[in-house]
Length: 310
Length: 307
Image 1 (cartoon, rainbow over the protein chains, first blue to last red):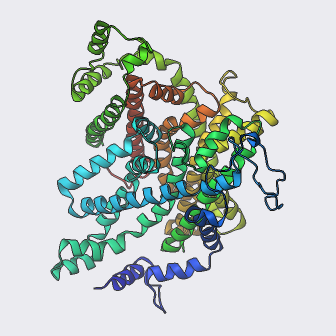
Image 2: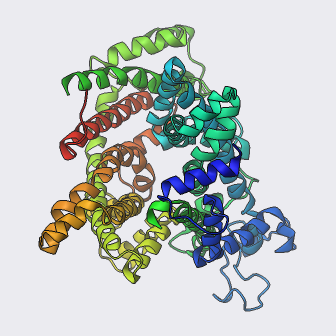
Image 3: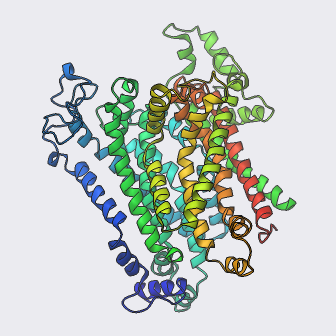
């Protein structure tokens, strides 16, 4: 049985046989629905915008990060609130007198890299652990489930705070490591539940009877049918990881100078908030729009994949 | 039911030991010598160092240190900070602050979240639903500390509706921080309720209830809500615990002397015993909240039976 066939079988089964006509796989249906969703398109466009800032900052500004700064201009707000007024410094200057727009563009990379890497690591871990414990059960399941419980029981901010204080260097990878260690649990539980539900299906028994190995059963038959909810959660997880990283920056245990990120800029702006609110407003808008785009994508994908709500 | 409860409590033990040990190991692996930090730059006499090491079991292997600490903790003695104050009394004045804050946040997310969720769920696909859905997405997207600072600036400083910071004005000073703290979970509760309502609206028992000619409010309240709110109970129950550990940011912005602030200072000044003590209590709260939620499940949904 090939991938698409089992996918079709699952789609037909869950929607009660109402899928008819063209290639009616769950993914195909979902894609057709997604293309027509304005929120999906909007989220995608926003993400492309921010993604290009993270990948190629030189497209958006000619200045390098933390360069051409003039301490005398520090905390000078923008001349006009209209960012398209043609002013050379549309966002004004930051606390050290660097052009705020350039700093904003360079601040995109860290949160995006952190969000995506943390989610990829967590996804990999959870697919591995979740399918092992769901498929084999027994003592392995017991062991993995208890470890998951322990990691899940750690208070999130407190745990990250303690671990990061112990870290000598606060670069992107330290943050990625700590956040991944805290964020794999929900997806692992989700994956385990999905695998347990899928492993008793007829097509799994059929594959086993045909002599398929455990590995083949897991990767070719169970995973394609079990992974959708985990993927959907993963898109939400990117937003949660970016948000968590910004909280760590805010608490002063996040990225260190000279790393730039919107979270660090927000943290720097705290003390100046009453006199110079623009220092907080701009990074807050960038950060929120990025989170918003991931959330909108996640929502759209979830709605498209959830036949119950269609 | 009784056997189920006992089994669940037994299952909590490894989780409690695991989480507290991880935190204990991490805290005491922090670089820097807290004993030396106590004396500033002056060198301490060796005899004093030895005495302090003896007192806080610093020469034992980590596991032994941890075991000794936990043995005392379960007799209600969470140890002393390196300044000689007992952890329990160092936190005494802080618990009520965080507890009140978490409670206000919790009530807010419960009332507002369920109301918005039901409203959106009943009008799925219509304008109200879109507005609520978009609004909750926005709330999730804006980081809590930005919401906190903006609320403080606008509602506290500019319009002077709420106290700006501190806890001097009793319950009133908890309203704004509580709403800010609860807003993130509010968005999740509203979405959870909305989905659950929208799914259950199509259930057979709903058609039966309507076909019987029951008045609309009775159909919604007795039949729809009772079935839709079960998943929300899980979320809300567990959230009370995470609100308490998540209060850190809001306490920092609104300058409230709660547990979060205490922990933050404790981590920075390497007050290991304080951090571990608070973690132990927070994990216990979380575990018991989970247990209560699971037991409540059986009460709310008679189809669930515990063996």
